[in-house]
Amino acid sequence: MPNPPIGFAPGISLSVASRIAEAALAKGRELNLAPLTVVVLDQAAQPKLLLREDGASLLRPEIATGKAFGAMALGFGGRELARRSAKMPGFMNAFSDLCGGRAVPVPGGVLVRDAQGTVLGAVGISGDASDKDEVCAVAGIEAVGLVADTGDPE
Image (cartoon, rainbow, N blue to C red):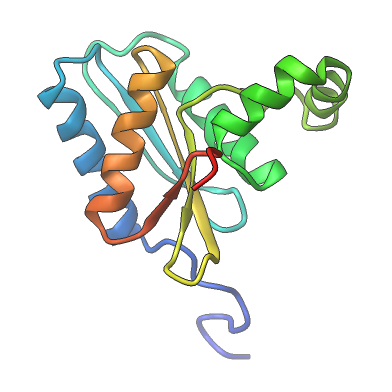
């Protein structure tokens, strides 16, 4: 039996996840945002890293995870999730039920892609307004040379 196991896509490494989160938090400090929580999920939508700034409120880890999980679950960023939520509430209610209420369909959940478009994971940020959270997620992803997919058309 090979050790480590073979056949699993590597997705985002812990080192890259850490650099994404640190750059995202730095952007939040630059913009003087409320305390942020950053979650990075791997290619299997499993937690790779969670950083919660001092002073971040109680449910920020769950909200940040929900933003990233929603993006991974449907394969597009939070902006598209928000649009679909507004246009198709019945579908989004069913989606919420199917995923046990874990998805948060708002900006701030951003897919992480490589240059070829392969999804490596997702970043979710919560703490300030969703649009500002998203700006920080994009900054973190781009800081490591990867492609941020917010769900907006190119």
